[in-house]
Amino acid sequence: MKEFQTETRIESRRARVATKRLQGTVRKVAKSCTQIEAKLCTMDERIVAVEEDVDTLKQQNAMQESQMTDKRWKLEDFENRQRRNNLRFLGIEEGLEGNDIRSYMIKLLQGGISRTEPLGLE
Image (cartoon, helix red, strand yellow):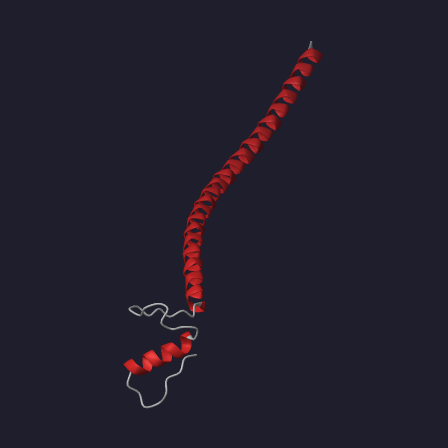
């Protein structure tokens, strides 16, 4: 009977030691889970901040693209206007100039503008 009691005590101690080890392991796992949870919360906050920044940058980019398109249209309009060498004179009948528009306009302008030096057109 003593042997049985001794074996029972040994088994009981083994069970307690195993239980303590298991409890230690559970504590370690719980601590690890808590740390992982904290890291996940931090990462989630950072992801939200990055997404907000990306949304802001997308809005700014869209606005700048719109402004850039407007500027391109204005630049193209200015370049087209700069290339034009046309002068329009209103109130002058068509066909009076004959074949030499330049000479006709010089005579017309000299007659309407009083200058001491001769007029020229480029």
